[in-house]
Length: 310
Image (cartoon, rainbow, N blue to C red; front, side, top):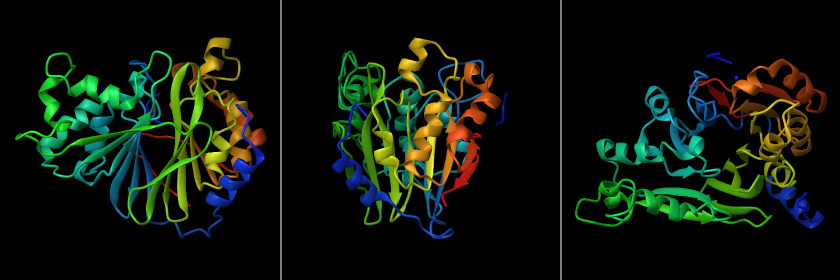
């Protein structure tokens, strides 16, 4: 690493998901799909890392962004990605280290002369958190009360509108939600447990090739293996060590849970991300624990590095 850290799912649902997503493709059939890390960190500002964000590249173009954490926009620029190529932004949840840069990207679209809608997909409301639609509205929509009212033309058609942000609230309720973006590119999601925070895991599929992103979660719902089953690559957030306290474990996966889920999902590769100082201090121990259960390849996310889905 550079710069430094079953709620119960029915058996039928698990069988459905396994049949839907299992691939076992020969190496080389996924050559058009790469994952690039824009932010490998969390909410800290003394770790040398941007907050969580990833790009899914399809045949040489950045088509999907997963999370938009602070600092990721600079790495987006360095990645040579074109904002106009993006078809969707997928938010795992609305914590600041996963969503704070969204206004940066929305405004940047003016200067890239984007003229096509941008889909923003995220969780529905729960507890004290707004839905994704409410979140975006609070940022841009109300000319008197929103945080950035001068960007209201990006959510309400006006004479000055160049492109619109189209928000979608996703509420899977312990089953896989799916939507096609193009004939061969689709997104899927399922709800996961991140303490009281409404949260989603996402899967991006190009034909039969796919990558799944856990987002922040504690692993107790049992939903992630259903979504990730047979993915070529599973990106999981390593925010705590095995000996973390009760509160941390209510929000995040321990290394043991990471290894168990990755093995249950039968993925080819596991990439660890969302590092924090408390997790990087225990990284060697965590890797040993993960590898005790997961027999595939383990990769550490490095900012701006691209990983081939295979």
